[in-house]
Image (cartoon, rainbow, N blue to C red):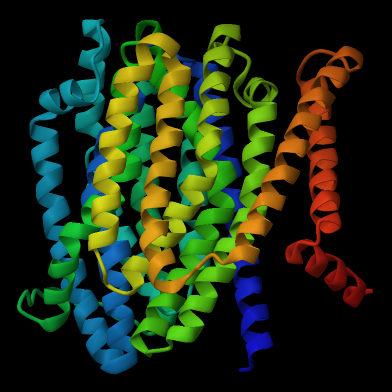
Length: 518
């Protein structure tokens, strides 16, 4: 396969991934809307978000890092150097270990939820804290289900199979949406916790058929002394700390948020971060999930030139799309929150605090994109020290910023702390790579300046356009939808026109592709 065919294949894969991820994310938004109109930012929602976050943080901090940062590179190396049989044997050992560890952690979490809730939230209302404890006990098995499912995802993605993993969130979201329509009135918030648990279980189940089609049998076993497991253990410590940044940042901010607005800060941050991750994650995570196995294979094959070229192009293209996303989201935060979550129990106050969180959170989208891409660079090379240092500094920076900004700026201060710490993490990853590999040259920096200028102009025009449309369009959901749609189309066209006029390659390629299609 020549270079052009490889690029077209990668672009097609990323496009399919983005489409499937988008479906899951849209369903996730609808799931959150149903939760918002049923429970708003009240005590039940606050307790539920705390209870659902605790097992996710434990999984993300410990096992997600081991799978994403340690298992996939070593499994890819086995495929390249030792063959499929040995690679699958190693995968079976890894899956067994993950199942045992996540199972043990699940039992501990279900037995002792009280101290965990006290660590993650500081509710002044004892009833809310008590409800969070009960819900945590119900939802803690998600750690076990997640560990098994994400290990299977690693096996599939390392073999360039991305469809079933991209459909996982769609399956779980459909289960939860069905619960709201059919059973919520009868079983309430406890039933919702059970529906989330069932959704996570089914995420692993849907991965079994593609594994069978790929003839990838995974047999249980435990060989802790194998070379592959040795490499995983050597990488795991540094990689774990580096991937703690996002889950720990969200957990720290949620604890500070539990002290705001009678605990409603927890729900406001959760709704805002979920929407933020939909908009940022559809593109960013689709890109990183596709390039990471490729980077791991290029490293295992000693193809340093192709490795560096892939990184540079990925960073450049990602910034081209992420910068206008960030500026646009800051401009439309309030009507977007009102459109998606507003109504039912989700009143004007809930809209206000949630949109404030989303607007300031969006300032860190570039940092979020870069940290996800650049951390994969270190992981693919099986180097953990850089992300280890960057992750530790970022976590400390977030805590310091929360302490300094929350009392004065409330939920805006928490969101800004998250954005700034994400940017710090990205810069600390970029600097050593820049010194070693010269990822950004003068032209790249000039292009970044052009993208930033175009995004700022676009964001300002979208903000002014919303004000103008608000005066002529009808109030309510229809008016909000029309205003957002017009501003999104106008903003995208303006950004594309500006970047084309400034000579950016991505805009030129889009034009040339359109003419080739004709």
